Amino acid sequence: MGEVRVGVGVFAVRDGAFLMGRRHGAHGAGTWSLPGGNVEFGESFADAARRELCEETGLTIGNPELLAVTNDVFAREGRHSVTLWMVGDEVGGEPVVREPDKFTDLGWYDLDSLPEPLFQPWRQLLTMPALARLDAILRVRTWRSG
Image (cartoon, rainbow, N blue to C red; front, side):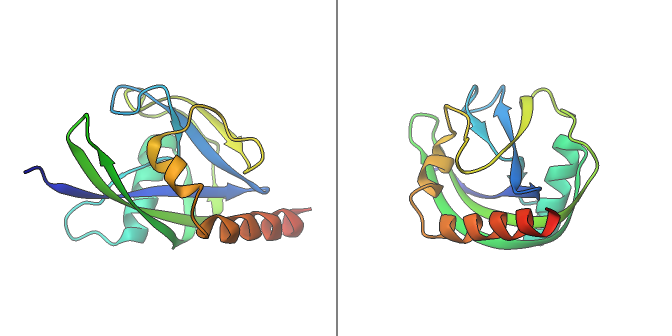
């Protein structure tokens, strides 16, 4: 039996949109998802979100909090991950592809303009009630910045 990994996906929210990247080199290559990755031993989920976002994009984030959890089984690849979807604010910096072996493109999107194709865990997330909470967060942060 394989092991189950715990990872984070990070909603870095700015002006009512969040950062997504086109995956490269790993399972899901060519699909779009959030920055993120595995939680390291002894690391908090918030710290993992901050670290992964910075490693992959150069951005900093404040106040990451749990939005949703998905149970992601990739049967063909023999992979199983539990993903904690974190959302944060106070995004600092401008996004840059810092790990081209993981992402080829980055862009800001909202729930009405998602790029295709989406990474499998994202498709699962779209069916969850937590998406309504994300939509509310995006609307409030757009209102505050406008």
